[in-house]
Length: 177
Image (cartoon, rainbow, N blue to C red):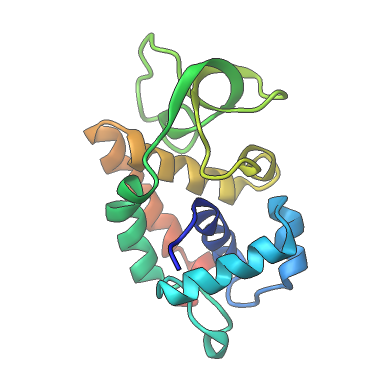
């Protein structure tokens, strides 16, 4: 059973619960997914050993997740760029990288979103509900923008994004595994 892009979104969200995972319905509501999508995502992530089983309260396997996000994700789910559009900044154009990277004159990468306030080139999110969910959850937003910088950034952007991602992945706030 191969992973799907939304599995990454669910795994990142699960990092926030600090081992006290709420119901699938609550996760689904927060990510704008269906309950069945969240359940299927958890099952695929367990099979891929990115998520511990029920004995571990279905918490992310942080070392495996780190390896996958940094070294495998860009191959499993390559970035899809498109035309200029209105949306939500991602990659180097969003914090925590925005203040550390000089943007230059090129349009920034944005997740297409009608209510977005930034004009840039379309950068397809891992899942269609990502912009809406990320705008309501700062941790999720920062993690997904770092993941996008790793998927599509230049060498310096990727390096900074990897360091920031590891810091968030292993922060005391998310220290269960």
